[in-house]
Length: 301
Image (tube, rainbow, N blue to C red; front, side):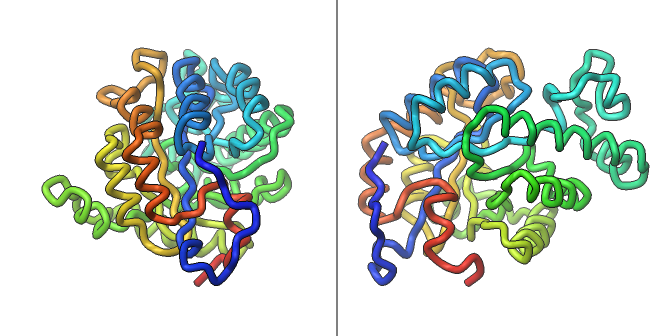
């Protein structure tokens, strides 16, 4: 990966931009884990979010321990995936095959209105934090699969439970559409009217609790399609402050749980492309994980 300065100067104009480049779904499959290692060793990837109950978790942890500069966080899975607890402990959150339900809206209502479902959710979140602790990896950040922590009940549980386990940074998916429009005017998506208000409330809530949050996040609108040109363009138009850019790299698709239509190999190619590396250098952005970058400036500006 590109070198990170060890003694930043606060007044250096090049350090007004801080960039975390994250791979989600670390541990989902060997193809994902291999891509994370390649993206970090050969490219600009600085961070990965680990699925602790996924089939490839043990392999992911072993790779992470060989990559001490890779910052690893917890990717809480509470929908469309494998739980840490058995189905008997989560009867209202899982299907007969033992996997989490996929009906996010209906499940979200039950989490809010039904105390026993709320209790099951709390137990699962606790179990996933404990599983991460058991890996022995330092906890850089916590986020959720499908950004389910925008649900205020999940956000509250993640915060209260996470604080006991060292939660110090998280993600609020607030993506500046002006940047996307500058990168690719013809493909600029409309504003995120549904998710952004919840993301802003969640970010304010977490910052009040002392949890570091990026000022802007990229990867939401073009999820699964973060091409080399798009990643390069985002970096070239990177706003001041702390940004997170997240991708879903893999050496190939076709693994269990892979999302239909995602260009996994294309996103890995973006992470190691010479154009993207050059864009990072030209931007002057300081690269790292939340543990490297969140203390340089106040959490709120």
